[in-house]
Length: 272
Figure (spheres, rainbow, N blue to C red):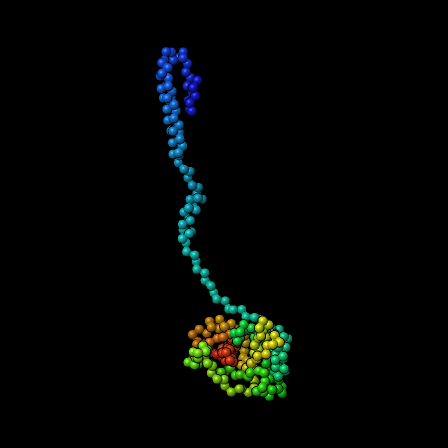
């Protein structure tokens, strides 16, 4: 018995008879060739079998992938938010700060909103603004030229002239300050205590202070410098160094601002 990969052939000498032995190899070759051709045919059939069709989910993903990749991302619409300002301080600590600096020469005028805080002179330290009035019998002390506070009338402070720029020092020359105003007993006053380093106006070393005459109006609130610039676009505002003190003063809405030397008053009608 002879075995091939796909066929078993039985040969017996009784069946072959007198077949010449030299023809046997040729027969075997033919049989092996037939088997090889059959194996090749089976292999080709297997190779040519159609590939499995993609599932519906795969077809959907393939169809949607280019569109999803090329779809434009919607632009985010950002609405500017007002800069949050610090909450007004507790009344007792505000009163203590005013008393420490003014030694009882002023009395706090505690209305609905009588204190605000912010960095009004732009030095990075928190300042205090408080509404006050002259203490009874202490007006002369407030007007003393040797007092530790600077008395100013913001409504009489002129804006710096841009033509008076000093190219050597790289700064703008400020308009000379007007004559020191005199405080009257009935005046509405604002105290500004500039802060000192990290503790701000709460620091015992915070002693630079301004007493602003005829400067306490209604709706007193602090506004950041950034927001003040936005709300005054097209109104020719002054150059702002720090936060501003917004209010309605003598029926006009505007703000007090630090000009590098003192506090001035701005409202749109200033330019008319």
